[in-house]
Length: 437
Ligand code: ATP
Image (cartoon, rainbow, N blue to C red):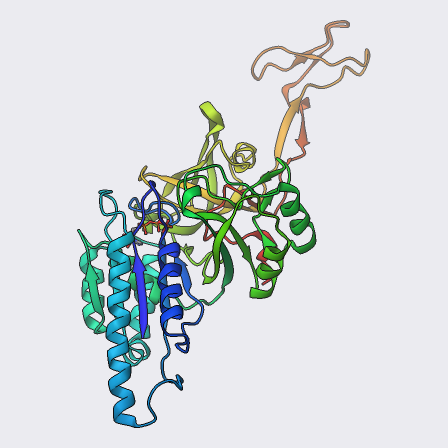
């Protein structure tokens, strides 16, 4: 049986991964022979307005076929399994009701149960829903319809929007995947400053990067693998394998007591949300890759936020690199006629494409005008006005307008991909250090 959960937390606390881990711990404790496997954390469209933080949904699978605590007799075994499934559902729902932050108007929990047969039979439907949920806006009605089509047992609370995440998460194909080892705090520390020995994290990073990534920001000598809010997570170690995140964990020195940890399989850092699109096809909340030519030189406003316009022949759009990330400087150095490929999406400003990565496909040549040098006096001549030629201040020699020289200015950008620095990246954004994978 597959069990999916979403939308249980708010900025005031909790986290769906924590609730999933609490449920798994309870199930493993009560049914030690039940195979609960590794839970999954699936990030969905980062641009949607309903998210608390990273728009993550969780699911896990329980496999009770190989439990030798169950009766050998077929009929008896089936009866026991049925009873246990019922009990598991009760536990999941009890935990969901107990821990979800119902008082927050933006928390609309849901959970679903789906048996293995219906999962296998309907995976294409689920995967189609995932592909939409990870890159576009979905409605609760669409999710309800999908839930019915696949015969899922659905539980929704308040407006039940969490059902979108439950179904989207379950449809993830993990075409590319990473792992995140989440370390949870003890309850009395929720909301307090997080305490980890900084140097132990840098040492781990030095040894294990790039197999584990986004733990530190080297330039600012800062830890970036800890959230800042009231949620129960102390830190999350991200990496390409279970081995590497376990090894990284063993190297850390914690300065506060930890409750427990859990590794999740995840679609984080895979660019799963980026669908190639024409600019004319873009809708609000889409995540996409667009390609085009810069048609307006960049403009910078307060805090360094930088805007420029590109066109791909179907339409044009304003693109934004915000002041908090280093991409603002890359964006500011673009000029008209540069060709770029941009990863990003549209959030609340429906006419602005927020950039996650900039790939320079072609750099336009830029020139500066240089007045001619006087052949007699060897000094630079002065312009006589627009199209009026040049004159030497000393010997008064006059030269025609076409003696002006155009000097190519070297560009301070390269034909490469520029990304946001660790700490500011979206959960789904694939790091350049993962590009070979
Ligand atoms: P956390 O990462 O801490 O678990 P969160 O950022 O995942 O929090 P949620 O509390 O899960 O935020 O809220 C996200 C809500 O948006 C959920 O109700 C989810 O079902 C819904 N949702 C997810 N993807 C989409 C989508 N593509 N379109 C519309 N709604 C979506």
